[in-house]
Length: 102
Image (tube, rainbow, N blue to C red; front, top):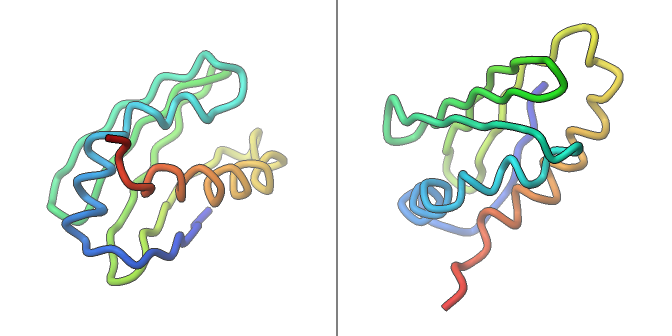
């Protein structure tokens, strides 16, 4: 599954906001028991490991000019939730890019 989230920020701003808010990703996964680990193998790629509902999902976020692109491997057993995941990613992806509160 791939979801592009457009923005009007520099990649430096997106990188900063993702680094400081990536812990919030788990808060947006239904069920409230998700664990999310992230790492940055390169300046424009954030890798994610998401554990929830007895599943481990691998994904990444790639920063491109004017958008960030989430790539997530959903196992066949969870394919039915793809529309829900995409909707949540679009909504909460914008939340992660919002300006930090003062």
